[in-house]
Amino acid sequence: MPKYQIYFDTVQGETKYNVDIDEPEVLDDVLHEILYDLRERGDVLQGDGEPQVVWNGHTLDFGKPLPPQGVRANDVLRVSTIATNG
Image (cartoon, rainbow, N blue to C red):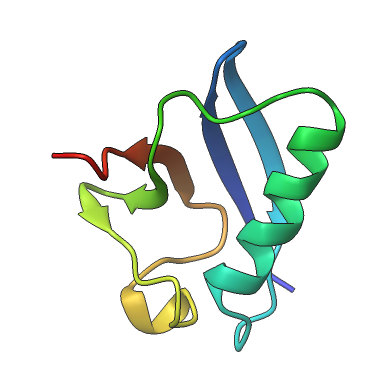
């Protein structure tokens, strides 16, 4: 199972997660679990809006597995929010 490093921009600062993600698994499923865990620990994403995942300057599609998007094991992903109010 490939491992990835995911950094979350939280109100308390940057939080790093090392995550195992199966090749056919989609970000949408994994991200919900991690965000739930962050909330349980008292961390929330900084800003108001929808989360986005960025890798190598590209915003990733939550509905697709990582390998078809070019992401490889041990790559670094960043999660932040995008403003929904313009």
